[in-house]
Length: 476
Image (cartoon, one colour):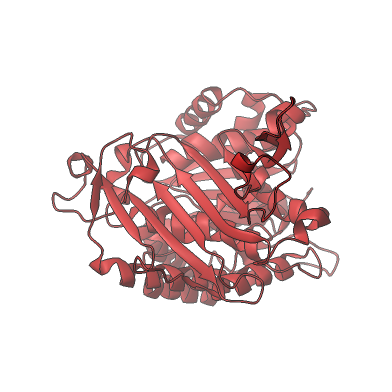
């Protein structure tokens, strides 16, 4: 990427920029993955100067975990910060967006070329509709017209954070608005879990190892368990979290996307359109898995949640959920997909577990003749890797059987300094225009249909209170 770029980040003084975006942008810069001529504009309400914005960015970089780049081309933070400017603006003011548009136009005139423009919505989701409307009013969504057929500059793209809407009706309105302003090729709906190395590896692992793909069906797989556990409470996010809850916060996006990757059919190629269509097809076939427990739905709230800052005193927002879903197609008919997520539970981890059906016969002692189950696990965090449990005979005169693991660990087996954070990948793919790791309209709407079915079902399910630090299996 050599063409001039202007990246505008709305809500730049917020937590997302401080904790993720600033250091990700610097990492891309340090590896020479940004064009030589780029401008990063921070847009927010606070009365910052350019220098104060640069100080904020410098502190965010310096406070980030140490991760060295092996092939640094540009490693000066000060040189990096020379590309930063700040625009004070109210996200609800049409006039402020018009002023931003004039600044972008002046930059084009200075360059003598139509620069590429990327807009990043790093704000509260409740502001998305207002921001999109103001972008339209100011004419910012209209790409420049290239001066010749050889001119590859002038594209305009938008990166939108999750959650995409609060319900299916709101998601449809937002999507309709986005569709009126931008073409689908310009819209990048972020689910940063798709950009995590282990999640990306699900498809590679499946389709590059026939020993597993040939067994990837209901004849060999008994059940699938997707876990998204957090040991922390909502902390300072009470105002955002209350009324959203665990299901909308991580279930509607991260967890259903991981389910789609596990369950999708092989794609004819690796193009973004093909892979996204395959994910959408699975999600459109996903429904609640009916069980004797009334759909297998559990919803809980940790004790003390009502006392968190900006949480309603009578809030029924769930901080824990467990649902059992099924994919209604020939490959997966009858296989339960259990999704489980909670805050303030005993152990923080994100993992996917595929339980293969147990053996019917065992060349072992009578005491060990029960079925022995193989389990394939994708560990997304904290220890990224892949594990496979198998069974073998313990050395000795007796036919005792015990489990062992074959495993691959990213930190142990690869140079983690060379790997990229999920937000680095999100930004880089946005610059390249690669939409593979971003969700499309069909996926979003299919996810919301599943979530709506769950919410309609659990209206009659009482909210279970659980102690902070509880084990997830104790919450029933």
